[in-house]
Length: 272
Image 1 (cartoon, rainbow, N blue to C red):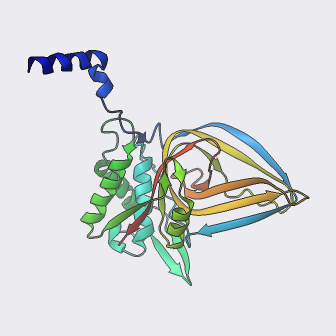
Image 2 (image 1 turned 60 degrees about the vertical axis):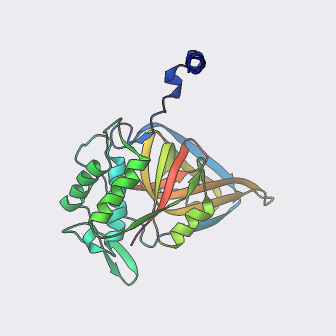
């Protein structure tokens, strides 16, 4: 026993106790409403022709945002967007609210009301937002949304679409084809306006909005654009995720992959 204590003491002298402390789990919601713009970069791509591939959930997802001034609410807004999307099928998910009307296969989402705000407030609690550090962890997002859905008599499942900070493109595309929205946890990101990228030839000109901080958004599509020169050589490819941002001022946009930030984690969500 005495020999064991001597060995243990020697180990602790080489590796102090603080070396064994676990690193705190990353939280999402850094600063008000997720993140803030670091800079805006004008971009021009000269090209002769381009090819496009696009897959979208029919009608997209709701465009909710937080207007209550709660700190770091982006995960709660994303959760409410997911619930609003599925509320068109399961009306009990958001009480006293009909999230959408479907007319001739077209989806029209209702503007958020106090009922949606109440959902965000409840998710703020069930997701343990700001309990430890500013924002919400991925684990607390998942467990908090699950608790809410279970209370409404429904089930929820999560399917991973990001591995080692890389998008599993086939998994993401499969989710969109199956009409399942995707929650994305990002650390820094480039956002491009959905009104951009409409040039047919000559030059594609647009602005990249570079955001700092950790944020949570909801993906509802993917768009891949390939640009070719006069000799039909590929000169540029942009992989874009169509997302509902949770921002009131710019509720939708494209996140440009492999440009500025990091896709930390992401899950296709099914409520049934």
